[in-house]
Image (cartoon, rainbow, N blue to C red; front, top):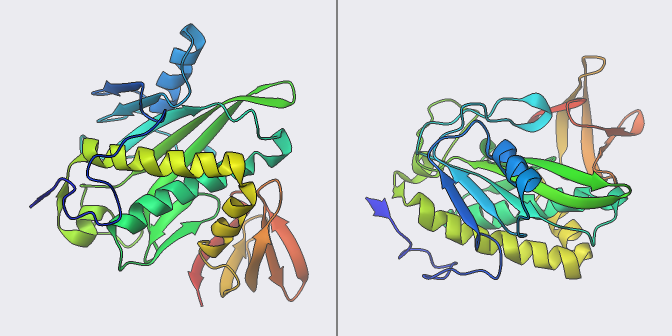
Length: 264
């Protein structure tokens, strides 16, 4: 079965955007879409909303130096350019929130009956298994965000058998049209980005509502001390650090400083 959009009740049959994806570049193969977009920016004026998509990355990157590995021509792998000069440097995690929510909207619209969550800072989980990773790289000019490159890897048609990863096809058994799904994704990104520009407080509220483990007892591991403890996620700092309450009180964590193994 091939899915081309007819069954998509939550999305338009002919998706369109104002600027996200209007300048669209497809590369059959590249080292990294983030890197390819950086090269484009260094060589010429690139309009906001530009997307570079690829069928295969030879050296895809994830958060904190992790490798993003995906099968050829099976998944959505792309980078897009934003110019969020309306965001103060100290508030840059708002961009991460908005982009995570946009993919959450996208996946939730396709999998209406599944439990879709944002895992801090911006992975997307379906029933606890990772379906998407996001890597955001900001270009700064003084104290201002000059541009933002958002890399996304979304598992679509690749089938997984392990317990850590999943994909749309793993869940539904359906083959999806990647280029059509990209257009749907672009509408979700644009909607959240415009919401970020006009109503950032809605973005922050929605992010907590969709955050994996928020206000739920969990077993954590402090990676700095290798200490395992029970705690509760109570929020996110302005700079994006996770706030966890335990018997020892409140503590904040940066990426890779804490592990969230499972809900107890």
